[in-house]
Length: 347
Image 1 (cartoon, one colour):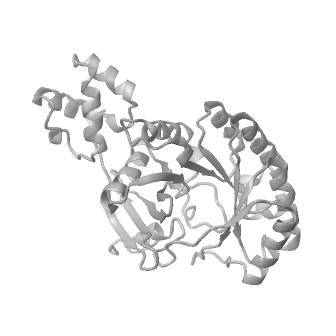
Image 2 (cartoon, helix red, strand yellow):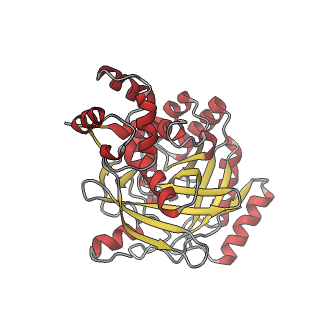
Image 3 (cartoon, one colour):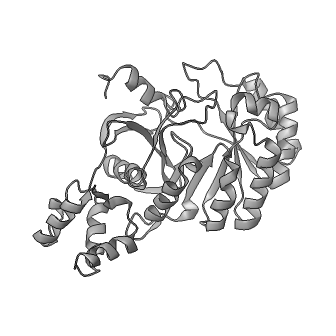
């Protein structure tokens, strides 16, 4: 089988080319072409033809293609549905802020975590993405949109810590000067709380931002809407967050989708204050995106204000996420689901 050249780290690529009898500097040339988005080795015009033939014999070069592209008329947010080499599809979103352009990428095709309010997990997990496929989500979003990507969030379809090794390799690739040279402090990884991987991630000291999709501060509520909580528990999650912070010095953020009548009561707010203060976490309140296959609705403005008042009184740092792309299937997994229902629907 041919190797996935895009998933090789720079030093690995140099060693492989050296084993083929090529000078190590050829690796830098190949990397530059890969970072330009070439779709064949034949396009690498400054390489000797013999080397291009060697590469074509030994390595595969599969780039994604656009199945669907939606551009928000409200704020310019761009949502892509990329077709992968095996016909599967994943979503990527490009959002513009004052500080730069952020791309939100997927780490898996589907998801096995089963969060009750999420579109991504409907249908379960199909497979995990390769490092190269995640890299190409960033690269081709930049190339197609014409917007220089400065920040990355792994917050799309899938659970990044369920694809740990591939995600770590992707992070190293996109951080490399020969990749896209995006600093680790400009990368956010969002997890539903696979705490068995927190210490592994902390030991790498990557200096990225870890965001935990908390969504409920108590086991009863969280286990109902997030099956990943079962067998782990919020207490253990908070301890793992504290260890991560103590090891890396990087403050944790809690994602908290406000769901009407489920997790937005006074009791939940007061317990969230305690949880956040226990590990020095910042809270990111998220107005819930409605998913047609789900019964949940976003919290009312009244509940939101009452909730925030309690956080204010408790001295918790929080922000309310600005809703972007509300007119382009904003919730991750929605566009992919629509395409599965109607394969002929493209934009």
